[in-house]
Every structure is written in structure tokens, then in C-alpha cells.
Length: 184
Ligand SMILES: Cc1cc2nc3c(=O)[nH]c(=O)nc-3n(C[C@H](O)[C@H](O)[C@H](O)COP(=O)(O)O)c2cc1C
Image (cartoon, rainbow, N blue to C red; front, side, top):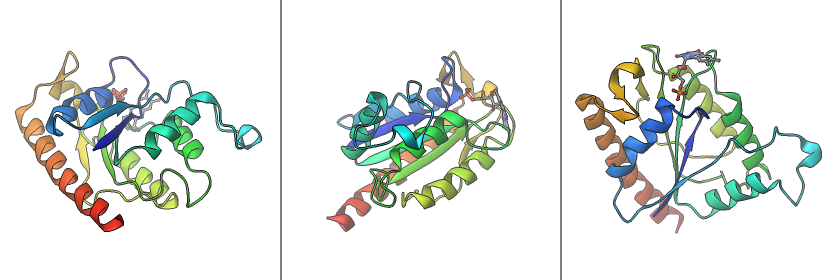
């Protein structure tokens, strides 16, 4: 199984990137884990979106095309999806309904310094991924609120959150296996 992990935050000490890192060990050791780089993707402009994509976009699309699942962890910026993440999705979403995002099982998570945990961004993300025909793991939002209290030096230190994350990954992996069988 190949998993592409996308953090919606570009900052070095991101809680969302740390959340992805915390999730990784709960996937089987043989899972190939690919961290997507969305920082170098240019702003979407349909004038430069043709058969030849900008190199960082082509790389992301190849990675997603070769993957069995996506895991996205995102912050919430002003009650919404951070621009870089939405930008990456827009690039990867062409051709409409037949893009690499169509039919790839996807897990959403969020972390935020507010107690709300970024649920509003996740809600928006679900709606956006509906437009790309991306199946999102149906579960209550996995949202880590007050992230500064559950991470320390980039490590998830809160045991209760870690246990929930482990369960989430286990359930998601089973769901992916079922989806893949279904598609085959
Ligand atoms: C421009 C900006 C807007 C933000 N808006 C929200 C918001 O609407 N809701 C929220 O919960 N946190 C908001 N925050 C705080 C983020 O949750 C916090 O910075 C978080 O650590 C970002 O995620 P990261 O650690 O993965 O970078 C905002 C932060 C920034 C920089």
C-alpha cells in the first residue's frame, strides 16, 4: 500500500505535519509513505495548466496517481482551507472528474491551536473533495484542538489522542482495503 501524506501547513514546526508524523507508525511498516511537497507549487493559473504541468504539480499528480490512499492534515485559516492546500487540490483536480483525485480513498484530519481543532476547514475540505469525486473516509471529524497542549517538540505526547489516532488509522486502513477490492 502506498500513502501520500499532505500537510496543509507549510511551516517548519507545523502541528499538522507533526500529526501526520504521529499517524505514520500506526500504518503497517510495509506501507510506502510519501510526503507531498505543496510548497513549491505555483499559484493556479489556467493559462499555464495544459498537457505539460509545472514540475512540482507533475510530481504531486504522479505521486497521487501511484498511491492507494491520501492522508491530509490541515490547519484552519480564517475559518477555511489554507490557500496552499486548496491551490494544490485545484492543480491536481484536472481533468474534471477524471483526475488523479477521483476515487482515491482519503483520510482527513486537522489540528489547530483553538479548541475547535480546525473542524470548519475539514468541513470545507469535504465539500471541495466532493467536487473532485474523492471518497473521504466517513467518520466523525478527527480534529486535534488546543494542539499546543498535545504536541511537544513536534511529538504527539497526549496518550488519549494517540490512542484515538491509532484506532482511526486502523479503521481507515480497513476501509481502504474494502474500497480497493471494490474497485478491482
Ligand atoms: C492566517 C491564520 C489564520 C488562522 N485562522 C484560524 C482559524 O480560523 N481557526 C483556527 O482554529 N485557528 C486559526 N489559526 C491558528 C492555527 O490553528 C494555528 O496557527 C495552527 O498552529 C496552524 O497549524 P500548523 O501548526 O499546522 O501550522 C490561524 C492562523 C493563521 C496563521
